[in-house]
Image (cartoon, rainbow, N blue to C red; front, side, top):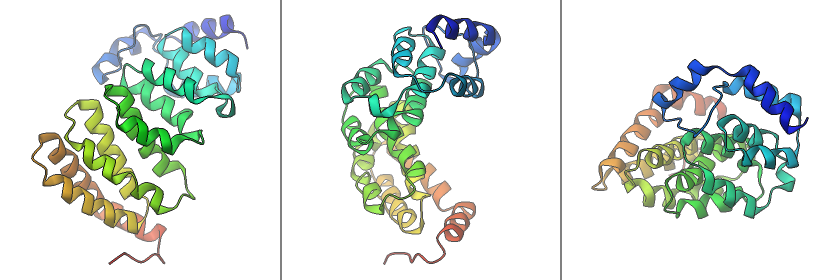
Length: 234
């Protein structure tokens, strides 16, 4: 599909009322057509994978073109340089999370970038690091527990960052790792209690929220059903 065809279709799918409402949820692109994510997913499947088109769509700097770009790009053709360039363009949480979910988590260096970006100062690059940790905990079904245990020191370190979109991502990563299996749940609970002791408002919020979910009856029941033969570590 050609670039002009994509733009025409996005205009047809445009919902101005939806665009006006996005700001209430912290979705603040410079320009947007107001197309809903499910509709973008359907459109992306119709387009298929296209690295060159993805590059052109990203350069347009419109909410929908950038989200489509990360949906249709080809992971095998994405370089680390491109990942860095796109991450530096993140200026609101939705774009950050969609890019991590649809593209970056599929990259061979996803674990490396998750840790690397967790050290960055830019709010949405740092968020991308923890969004990747959260997404990998869900999507990488065959990964060893040690790969996620290596994220815990970074979660503890950044738990004092009071910026809203950082602390929510740190919390997200902690909760998703803790819901992966019994052993990681136990470890995540230990980490949450350690974070709660830190003299920081954001750290206490991250820990309290994580403890509430990870200790809940629903989560405990789910992970025990999913991992009936796995023993809790001493």
